[in-house]
Length: 361
Image (cartoon, rainbow, N blue to C red; front, side, top):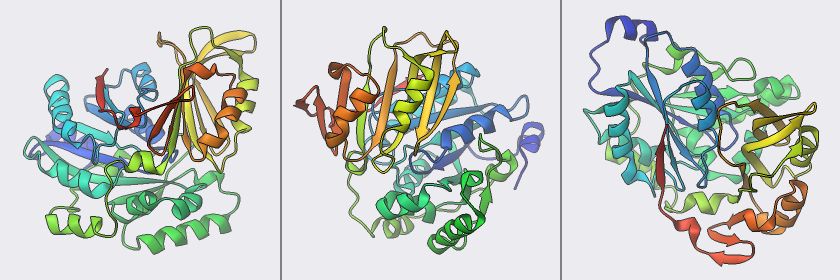
């Protein structure tokens, strides 16, 4: 395995731009790990980020822009199926405009590794699929393992498993049980614990793998034969509630955090967004993330857009009024996608099957 420093100094003769794919169920911490990874790369090593997002809102890319990281988001669909045709164009654009040493692809939480890897291999010699990395949330994976076929697939078909948020596990016995479950799903693949709240991991560990996964059609067919691949699996797997509450939306930070924590964690898996909050009497623009009731806030300074947020989970048709009340959202600003059916203020539509869109920064 080559080191990043060696790649900078020697520029090993790899055919095509190396591509590393990060998979993992929603809220696993993929974005935080990628941000930390890119920020810690040596000077002179240019890594760009292609991000596939749930819904039609760009949120996480704002943190990348704060750090002057090149990022392109593809939204409103899943890269492994619905939007797979956009992948080649997005990669070509990044290579032509950014001339990167490496591209990191962050999939949505619903992406299956097999069809995405197979598609990437079609773009030789423009790119070289270097590795597939799966991020697991040590606290919440047991619940996702029970509910989500995708979470199991992501764990089975990967070159490296990163155990994230392990420090939040209530005790060593609980963590050992998780590791046993992961080992049962995938006994062969190395498993590494990330470090710290931002999920730090060495670039030398995740880069230079030169994966052999999904290098022939038979392997892809075998991986996909265990289920009927539904191109709308993103909508089938989670409900989405998206809100753009308007420029005058504002809450006290403590009240907003408490509102997020009040939502049932068994139904609201993940929420994130950008909102203005009053913090110790001062208004700040904050990017928030909430997974299983754990809220994190990061101040961002260059965002000029309107407030926006997205929640992911299940049973949102039943929870819609509770979410609106807790977060003080105007009902008319809410778009609810319940397993493929879009409702805007109670009016059914078919937006959930819309085309994906890419945005560059």
